[in-house]
Length: 265
Image (tube, rainbow, N blue to C red; front, side, top):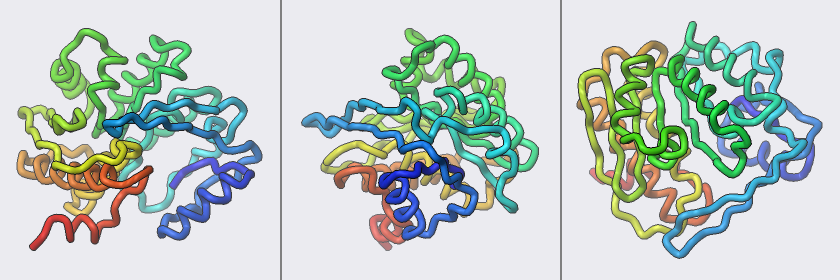
């Protein structure tokens, strides 16, 4: 994991949690700044609104030097969200994603946070440049509404596929997900679940999507050999993972053995 982990108690807690879960943090930066904080308010339906405390915090201070060398053997790089949106590190993250194309599959989740978008038009331009450099884009209907209000989600996805990524996946909560490729569209229903909250569901979906593609040997290039059956299987895997996250409090994604157990024999 490439991360700038703060010097405070939150930063130490994050590092410990990652290590305890088997995540390699040898490329993480020990940042002098404190950790950023997101305060989530959960509604009765499990949806969450966020308030962010980010001024002067560790996460957004990326430099080209810190991001200059990807881990040896990496086959994919996933980025986006606030790290791409906020100065001073956002431009360094963008440059890293574009450089990564030479050796890796590039995955992007714009994850727009309008509360922090002081210049949404400029951030839209950043996202569009990163989309053009990406092979996979996972985007929610809320993200698309913020980026391109008034346009149909499928129209935006089809335009993106014509100019960059091989795979654009649109998530729509309980309405399920759909994927757009150069050869057509595929869809997957949401897995029925008693929703506790939706915190972390989108990130879980993106991670599980990459997990399926990795285990299928699809990562490392431009994803030009994806069949529709591959896309549907990847969506199903990602939807199952996101459902488990929604079934419990907080951002608590499942381990792979939990997914296999949920899938049954």
